[in-house]
Length: 278
Image 1 (cartoon, rainbow, N blue to C red):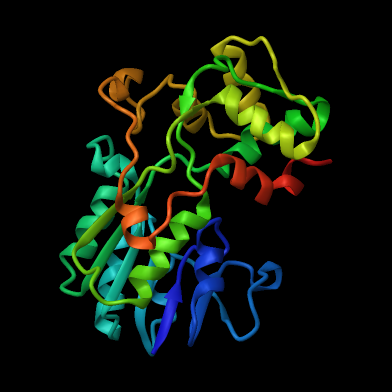
Image 2: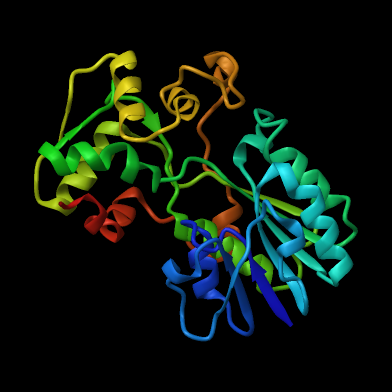
């Protein structure tokens, strides 16, 4: 039976598509621009149009969270015969910060009556490409107001590993896996890891939080998300102190499932060297 992958051209979705064996159907808004392995069935479709989703013959669903239509998408999937749903959710649900975005989608999936597994990653390392890439490519600098701030970025391949395991194997129904990534490191340590890969010394610009916000918006980040990244707003647009009780931990879910530790930021940097070169 076929596995349907939504968000198939995303950072995690494309790895899920590549890692699946057997019939795979990947949906994308623009099939002409999609690059998938040979044998993958590519269909033009959009989560904003649930009626257009090709659920015929689909047994398993990798669900990218899109709250406006999530309930309708889940209902249509179940009626069509889908029996397993793996949701790309967020660690913000685990810690109680997300109540209106990923959580309602999880709840719709759980109420569907089919097997479900939620994959809840934290900070995506791949965000550094859009946050830091423009200035690194321009002059070898990084725009961030606090180089000694801790972060805990996770390699998108680690997220895909767990999603694939839940799609392919039995025994994961009713589980929510929180994926934190490896132990936290500072922004300065991340820069050093990137610099080593690029063969150059990266330096931080001396900027205020407000200047960094203006810069991120100028390179295409929505202001609400940029404010969240800089700690100026909570997960759902509230006050910055939404995260005041957060403590960095390394969850055991990934190593227990995969039998190996999380990939490091240095590994991620090696895998993405080309994204930071002009």
